Image 1 (cartoon, rainbow, N blue to C red):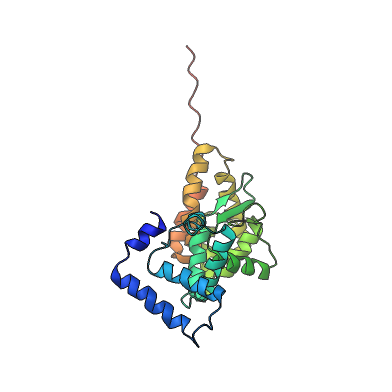
Image 2: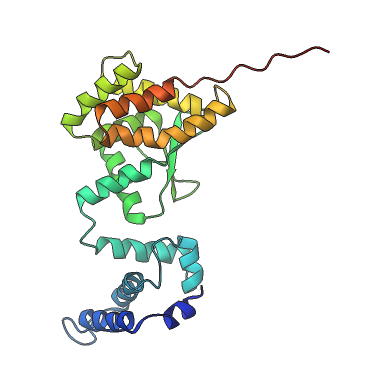
Length: 249
């Protein structure tokens, strides 16, 4: 729906909320003290709050709606997010887990990639990787992060509290891994997943592995030990069905 129609459809309560919140911020500390850049961020934020710009709109759709560039949309979203007091460390941590649960493997299984439109979340992930001595490749698409598999292992290990790491190590060993170290079992598990998801064992297995990958990654970071073991055992057990015998006529 065009923005003009959305604004027209606003309830009186939402219209009043917009005006009240705008004036409350604009008049502080004095009339006219707010810069144009700050006004733009304020209006952009308020349009989100009252539902004129819905949370499921893509950057491209917002750019079309507001008739501005994608770069401008990303900048406004970043400024809005930085001012959002609800985006605490625990909240960002949980959002990162949800984001990496949508990962995909590159064709050879050695690279992991996932899409991130949210600029604050992307910068948070990039900063965490940099702190670990790794880099994220976004040269082709700023909203697509590509990470080497071993760097991804360090990344998800860093997301785990110390008390979680031994649980994960033992769970993966029960699922079929043989290495003794946490890093070793994680690299082994993700390498197997990557090969299967990249099609090394056939298209059917690749499809199944792709569907199981997200929940399995999320299980490493949030689920009970038995759930972790079951999720990864299911992946390790994936095998391509034997080809049907050729029947000679």
